[in-house]
Image (cartoon, rainbow, N blue to C red; front, side, top):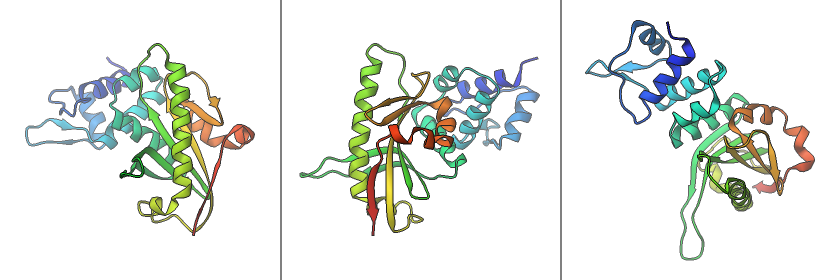
Length: 221
């Protein structure tokens, strides 16, 4: 008999390309029903992104190696997982925040933005595979995320158009890089590089890192 963790990772792997799961045993079907998956007209099980994120979080909680979990996800799943962890920590979230560029200014995209009280966390979710030069690439990505956060802090009215709950006032914006390539929290020029499996712990313990982090000040009138 397969363990629940084996079933969960199998479901992620089988549905990675958006394909419906056509055949499964009774145990798997029961689990899919519990997770809220629905059947299409051909009788296959359809897993929405929200269901896949649920499965990923449940698999990680069941002890499946996080690298295996992430490999079974696509980049939108990964962003959704980051947003789900932020929401667990009472952040209001926006995914795929974009600003169009023009002849005077480059466009900008931030994968996930979370707002809690007067703190705004901007996340660049890097679902990179293991490769040479990864640490220097992560440092460069952290620096670019800081630049995006500086720009966002000066244009908070654009964020309010996507997040109507944003109140007028003074905010601090924290750029964060989330990946699964590092084993512990690394801070580069005030930007934390956080392994996804430690993101929840990092969010709970931001005050412990306060003196090391680069918060960008911004105001919404």
